[in-house]
Amino acid sequence: MDFQTASQRGKLVISNIGLLLSGDLKQPILDADTIVAVDGRIAAVGKAKDVDTEGATVTVDARGSALAPGLIDSHVHPVFGDWTPRQNQIGWIESFMNGGVTSMISAGEVHLPGRPKDIVGLKALAITAQRAFANFRPGGVKVIAGAPVVETGMTEADFAELAQAGVGLLGEIGLGSVKTGPEARQMVAWARKHGIRSTIHTGGPSTPGSSYIDKDVVLEADADIIGHINGGHTALPLDQIRCLCERCHRGIEIVHNGNELAGLTALRFAKELGQLERVILGTDSPAGSGVQPTGMLRLIALLSSVGDTPAELAFCFATGNTARLHALDCGLIAVGKAADFVLMDAAQHSSGKGLLDSVQKGDLPGVGMVIIDGIVRCGRSRNTPPPTRLPEIVHS
View (cartoon, rainbow, N blue to C red):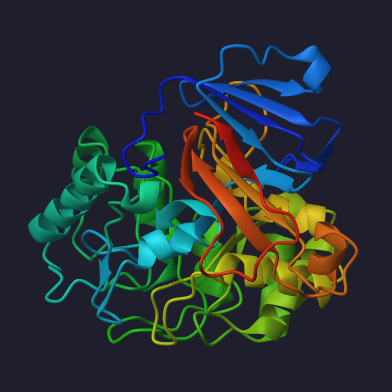
């Protein structure tokens, strides 16, 4: 099969699933072994004897491996196409797909050389990025882009214009000239009024021109997502992170390119509060530390092993939680949702007994197949260790 040109129209059947992770914290493991997708959307989930598998256009034998919703990276900085000027690297998004990522959410196209900071220019860039990535999916990955970095002088009319043009995100507040609590709160309110979701930078500056944003600014701004609560890279003091978890009810974003101690501490605070549904995961890449195709899997393994969290819940942080907070139609194994899947197994020679135990022991899983909108985009990943069991296409 040509992974790049296959059509999403048709019927996909995935059988012999050994473990089915739902992406839903309330029921993270489903008692099912078969998924049917029609025209890129999930049509049935259940036991093979109970679902209609006849007339499949493509049949995948999972061969006992695990299936989870495709991972959603909640924090990336794309520019144009599949190129990052931050590392002068081509193909990074397609490489993330080989790490199980099927969707990405832009936190601002800030790495564009000469990025415009005037209001006309920043709106033009956001609209261009939104349009470009709506029409282009590197490796099949859905890049939700067009996230303007807000600047002083913007008015409500600017947010209305952006929303009317199809822009649904703000870049990290604090990467531009808007740095104070009152000004940030006004921008967030205008964005929210017009259906635009917001993220605020947290911690020390990460790029020239960005600012230190402490708990007081984050609390006053009241953005929808506390962006990289564990810093990108420099985190706030742990007592400020506790304060944010306790006093703010917005999304808690933990990133790979951040302070690991702070990330683990934020997870512990969320658990103590009984609010794991707020936790979402991202890589905050490309960054100065590079591009990490397996960054999402590494973060899941870290939070599960060192963070003492069941692996099936950690996968929910990277799928269903993010989909809910960003109103996406993926991230869950449920009828009607997008047929975005990653098939995995314990890596060969892992000390873990099966996928979940191996992840809880800190090992990366081996990705055996990635499917986006019902299309098989890759077989065995070139970036993860080889899985113990490898799914295969048996009919197409």
